Length: 259
Length: 283
Image (cartoon, rainbow over all chains, first blue to last red):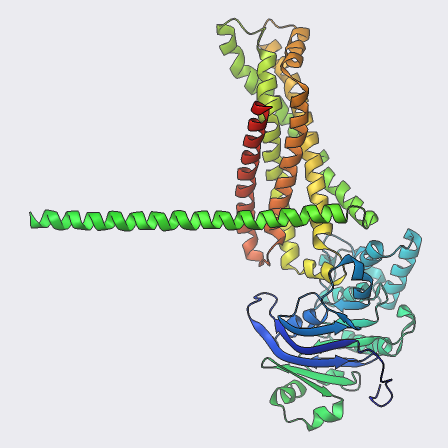
């Protein structure tokens, strides 16, 4: 979506002002400071950062899993993070896909996908089963439905993480390094599926999802994501479209493009 | 002479140094204990807050988890407790009968001894320690692994409170499990105690034995037994869950966390037991 076509009154999906991101493992360590970023509905962002530069911490803060160390952060107009039960419906408009899926080891793939539905929705058992089948089919996970995560390859666990995040039909999807460690077949599938989601996929009711993915290699994302940002040396650069990226002299960005 | 004065001076300095060392060590220990108490106390308050606030939330998810915990901390331990009750009956009667017979009280006091030793003290405490060893340690390992594998963050991202999902079922399961197993252990021990008395030719009729037991017990014993066992279950679940969940763990830190959890659970159970003894003596 171009800036000119966006209604002026539209509330940004994510809005960060002067945000400081702390490290998850060591909260006293700062990962990024003075972060200003606005994400609008329907945009597909890729945030490039080299390994160990804090992109998971950044995304977990954006996903409301961690509190920011400082600054203001809003999700669809409401202050984040949201932990209160009364605002949980708002919080659930955001889905989060972890690097490697981070599935619950005691549940099968199908049970992992069903968990948010069983916990939050008032759907019947039959309706939940039908929704899980739909998600398993869309992500080609049907053969592994009754396996526990430990018996499934990492790339399929990652897909199960995606299916679980889509279960409640969120409006925004954050993905932590979704292409890391995938072979060509899986990479092509992910880029194609995310492209469909950003345009509107039947699995989420054909509405266009707002996507934010992190990556340590920006090259596969060219032609798929329509907005680019970069996290380097504790600074966040919101660059915009790919033409800006091409003209940028930022050394970290060049590294991410010529990996 | 000068040499001995030097030796004395060195010894004095060593002593003062050692005393400083001991003081530092003691101070650190006390400080660590207070920090642990603070952490476990805060975690317990959070857990009880979640239990009160979210007791009826997502029942279709939590109920099977509670059932699984009751099975794990109760039903599956029944064979071990059957063995423990046989052994306890044998030990108590085997030790007590010869001593009581010296004062001619073998047909007067055996029931009272069983009531005092098994119902009030050994039954609940032994059950708590056995459940701690079998299930409490597994709690720390399971939750520590879940924490290390990022499952806690995963639940938070799904809008699920990890305390509600991981801790609440374990607290309920362990409280119910320890209470039930204590009852089984007491019944088994009382039964096997009479069996061993019979084998040892103690001249005691079953009716006399059970009358002695009934006479030695009051309603207070049953109330305190229920409260004490539930308290043991809650505290073991909270301490073990705290050590597994409360701080980010690496996989190699889980064994140390388990050792700490067992030590603190034992201390906590003994302190709670002491409180119940005081309550029993004052009421």
